[in-house]
Length: 272
Image 1 (cartoon, rainbow, N blue to C red):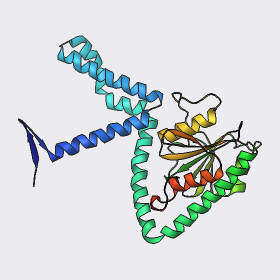
Image 2 (tube, helix red, strand yellow):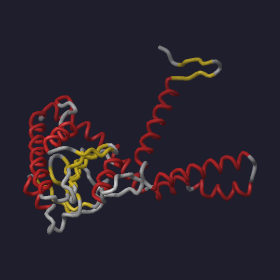
Image 3 (cartoon, rainbow, N blue to C red):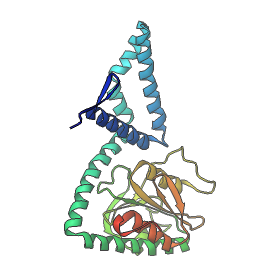
């Protein structure tokens, strides 16, 4: 078996390639986690501090090196403190992805058909609710999470744990409801949280006329592995955010197709 590749005088083992791949993936995940937020600028500042510290040591600038060394010695602890929300979201992503893989495996073995039926029923209820909310120009923000634990982005709200129905969704976003300004978080085809306050990034470029609800929905779709549904209070238009992209939909039929593609098993759906 080939154990290394000899490039001139530098042997590269399979473990070196694996090491580079893992580090590259971790850098990509950190970038995706921090992009679009002020934390990214802080991260660049921390990296710059380490680079300067390395340079002053190489140039034997002892006084400056000793000062910077005090920061470097507590660098890991400082990063954890500064990036506590981001570290929490990253660990949540790693843990929930592992659990989700196990859950999907057993669902395919024992409960594949029932799980699909439940998802399609939930999407149908969302479609009916979106139609009525759009018609009456009632603003709404719904987060569809593939994670059982929604703590990573639902900073506050009221726990509900209820079946998804169109009347319930409409009543939550009714203008006189105390929860109508927040977001509804749906996970495992159930309403987990209502009135949730979502993080909003200040580095998102949106067209004029799109307000805080669209900004929060798009920010959440950037920072977390979720799909967000936004209904404009001004125009009644329906939009979906996924992976940092905001898509304006023509009608609730297009909404149904998109939700089936994102939330239902991929082998049964193709992107419309």
